[in-house]
Image 1 (cartoon, rainbow, N blue to C red):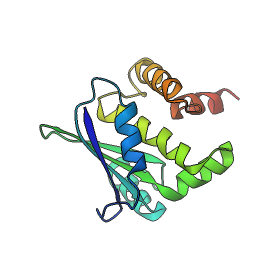
Image 2: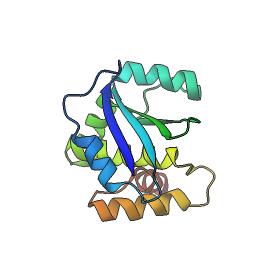
Image 3: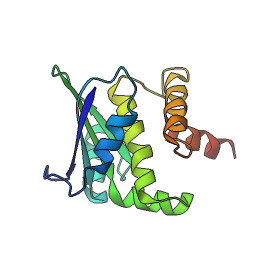
Image 4: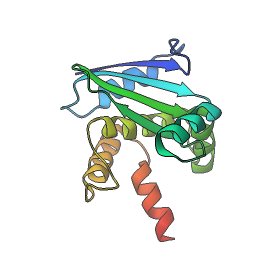
Length: 147
């Protein structure tokens, strides 16, 4: 079982914990520990992306695994990027936040879509179908590269 807390970019509790409850309910069975989701501004995400990935733009989601027992780690989600992606894809922002949180959680569990020969994509696909979500991030990226 996982416990998920949702905060703003400064570590303060987010007014609604709906996203955290949703992720805990739809996490893979092997997920165990604490997860914090920080809903951050696009400029804050840009700084995180530059510091940890050497990329100077606001990405949608970043994951920071923890080495601490009982703590899976932290997920940062850029609120502005999520809102824009939701509009472009024609679904609610809450839906996009769920897609991003699920993707981030899979990274915390050790999946890496850049190196794992499709394991993360298969897990993301299975979990998002079970949760009734639209296409996951990996499937969307694959589609955009094949057009």
